[in-house]
Each structure stands twice: as C-alpha cells, then as structure tokens.
Length: 130
Image (cartoon, rainbow, N blue to C red; front, top):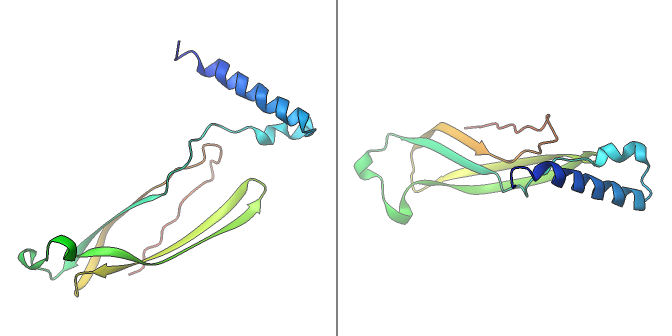
C-alpha cells in the first residue's frame, strides 16, 4: 500500500496547489511556475578538509585539545536575488591552522550540499587558495 501511495498523493498535492492558486486569482497560464518537486529542508553544507603537516614528526604532534586543527577565521555570506525564484549565494570562508607553527599542504577537500531537484543548473564552485 505504501509503495502505491506516491501517485495519488502527488495528484492530491497538485490539486490543492491549483485550488490555492485559483482562489488567489493567479492566472492559469503561470500556474506551471508554481510546480515544484518535493524537497526536504536543506541541511547546512558539510565540508571535510584533509591536510598534511609538512615537516611534522608524528611523535611530536600534540594530542587532545592542542592537536593541530583548522578553525574558521573569517566567514562571509551574502545572497543575491537573480529573478523570481532564483538566487545566487556567495560564501567565503577562511581557515587558519591552530596548534602547529609549520606549513601544511591540502590533500583533499570535500563538500556535501543539498541541491534543488527542480534546478538542473544549480552548482557549487570551490576555490582553494594557499
């Protein structure tokens, strides 16, 4: 029963949306712009950074709260509305190395973020500066 519910559920939600648009006197020729796929509330983007401490001896790396790690030193976020229903979000993050005085080399950076299923052009761009 659960696997067969998706189609009538979608039809019911479409009918409800169309009824609300009709009550609000929205012209029928633009109703299609209000059709969207279901999307859960997006989570905060997740980032994983992997780096190598250059010149560090494993037995000399401190443990516990003094273990070398990256901290946010600056975060700047802004949003720009492009057109109805579309926006561009810009984020700039600066990290600083804490607990180590030497140099580091980035090995990997992974970002996981939710994407609007109705926006095939949605993308994330990442620039890493040393």
